[in-house]
Image (cartoon, rainbow, N blue to C red; front, side):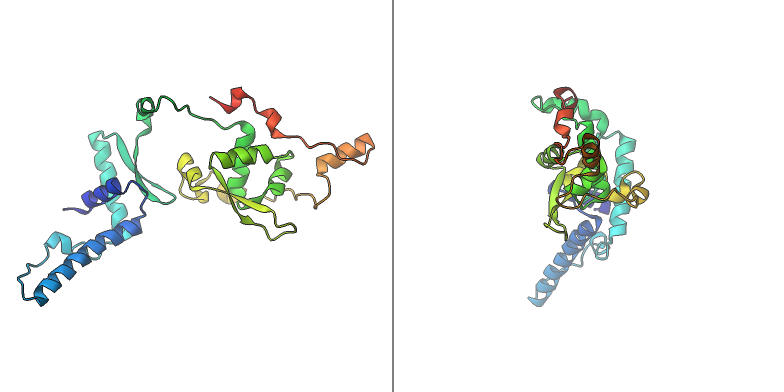
Length: 246
């Protein structure tokens, strides 16, 4: 047996993402198991043949060797015109069908329709992705509108999750992206986002102090000459069935 074929078998059988280091550990464990069986047979006075050379060679396999084996597999898949490929995601390597077969695969699930995010939802998701973990107040300071509806949609679609609470007055919730976000957008880490290093350093508008109206509300109050803050705008009014569904 060769390492590329072993890696292929493990990923097919697993059905879940496995990192290169985890794959290497599994391979080494198989060699160690075979060595233990041989040692036990010798202790019991039984004949025990040496391990096959190909198996012994895998005793020190590393994550780098696994990555090289995966590259060999993908090259073979491409040359032979296979419909799938091995791709690394946030949690590790998985087998995926190629995008060009998507229209055929979609016929397996006639009841499912592709869902698109509206522009306000995408804006909210982008802010969270680049600046996570981040509070709702900080998101709204950037967008200038209430984000309750957009956050709920992103939570419902499991693209965003609550990652804890900020060490701020009131202990506001912190929002961050999920593993599904990485899977959906085909990236491994936040650093894979376009211009991630630059955009993560841009200074964001400061959220208003607790109990104080937002800056745009203050301007509205000053122009109107009143003391009560107007209702903040809400993204819900910006979403229509046309832009929330394909």
